[in-house]
Length: 442
Image (tube, rainbow, N blue to C red):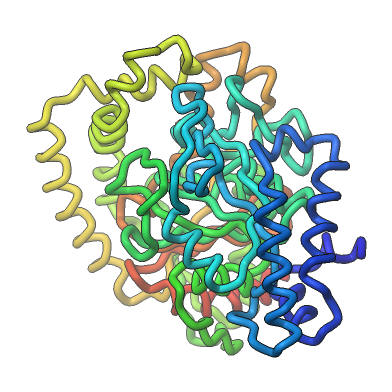
């Protein structure tokens, strides 16, 4: 059974389909593995063992009757602690929401459950999902797979750790400015940022609803595609392998290389070489609208986040970690007119970006320009926390600002991913392209 921890979600699903893996035994194995792991309480906020075993038992019967609902029917996964779970506390990593217990599941969890997936439990995260580092002194900071004292990436920190440490075949997170992609990259996983509106946010604790998205953190592109379909309640995407010959990639030079460190640069260069060797045509491209959009980040993200949480935060501000609280409060520096004007400008910049990239299959950049910083230093130096957080999120935020779907893949350089950014609502094409890119990178 120990080999189950190394298997992908898709492989486990195929084992169930062949009758080689019992969903009940599989779920019990992962629950036991979680309980035995030294980082259990740093990764999982709470487990849902009764629910998991009931769902696994139902999946076991469906498998016996050859009535499986999807390729992942019977596969257990983890869920970030901002997705509502009926009757189980959902606190979004914040003491401000302690004891918050919803009556119903989030819609994406409902869909996944209907597809037969098993809910293992809820994973730790940054407070209200507003940091890219994954550090949370108010609840727990999950470990990075390469160094338990290094930042795991956030805000879907526990989701990444649950997969990287073999305590779930896959995890579901959210991404407002990079919260699926940074922890995926820093833990050598695949992460999918979906287009805003493609997956339901009903029952997901918001940060900035106009930018919030749902996405999987997993081991392979195949897993990402299957999880994406499950959360939509759709049939699986046809992922037939295609060649990269004739595929056109652009490497983004605007903003994405500013202050980039040696390892992420090396990871990107390694990925570009591999994709070229596989037949892709790759050129560099400068898009000045990216820099213009980045300058709008403070008003767009800050206003919406603070507007959403102002009353809750100001009722008990001492319950928040100071750097995160300060980041929320930055939203009050702008007026409603500033916010509306910024959105008008962003809409124009998005149109210009799409026009500039229309002839390319995807745009490439290093997922994060930095590698995971040391957690004790982050906690002891507010200035270092602030500067590292902004830089960690800098490249991923491009995808959110431009409204894109984005896939991050491991490059073979530890904690360094490469991002493939595609046009809005092109997830199916991006995943097919990602499968070929994944093979080239491997």
